[in-house]
Image (tube, rainbow, N blue to C red; front, side):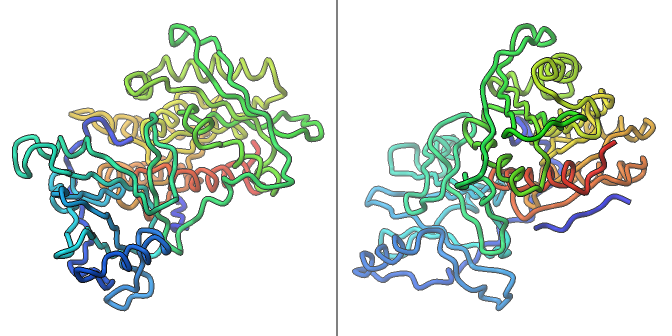
Length: 423
């Protein structure tokens, strides 16, 4: 049976088949809001503590916390919306509006969340320079007024550039320590290359990670192909994670290939089960690496990984070329694709074909209300098709690189670590 592991890009037009359960909002914040004349002392406390503020669960559940997001408004502020990743109904945006403490500049919004939640979030601030609340186009206009949290120093680089995105991690959530460079850890080498990509009509920039110098590898180095390379390496620093995991003995020294996805339109075109993209990965990228480095040709020691559409594309690549890719690491994969009568096309393909020598490692966020129904069906189909070694888990978060970075580390350890099969 499929192993369900306990918890430790949004589609362009997401299918509207499932409604989120709603925001677990607390109408009365679990902190004392200031009275008029007390705001300076209040904001001094907030600056020292950092945001969001945490308080005990008002229901007395030790596994939950009251989490309060705060914004300091001005005399012109008409409204403030806070959007933690996937904690809200896009069809009811008023549910994520902050309230103003009467007579003060304090805007607040409190949620009841399990103590292992983590997520990125943005503020959208109406300073009175746009359409009136409730007017046609108001919500679309408000989404152009994005701000980071100035009281939270914790940020991640934003996908496709722009200001960093703020994030919060509750006390029981997995942290990102493995992503921080550590003194004394041998470091691998990373360089960007232009790789011939005739299947895609030109060349493709690829970041190549070579592990620190180690004794010879007669069977060749394992290989990780991780999609959306321009974000995982230049922005997030994947090399630090690989250096640390290798130094700790959690994974063997490996070679990582990180192809660029170019831009949102190219990504959407190529990462929707396109045979040309799979052919580039299997028939051009892997041979290019093998001509330069002593990499393995064993599928069981080769991982193709991706997130969202990248997760869908990773699974399609392995199912199309199982003689090249023996492991799929798919995070929040868009297995709902495509919209319409052929929805969940790849899952249906799995259901209708014999089991292939491919191992799946899948993870999804509990708040991913678009992706979860298709994800859970995929789990059932894999089990029925005989993929007994597949792993599936759901984490307390959304469609979020903050979650994906720790999930990626866990998946690599499971697929390539000391206990992983080698053939």
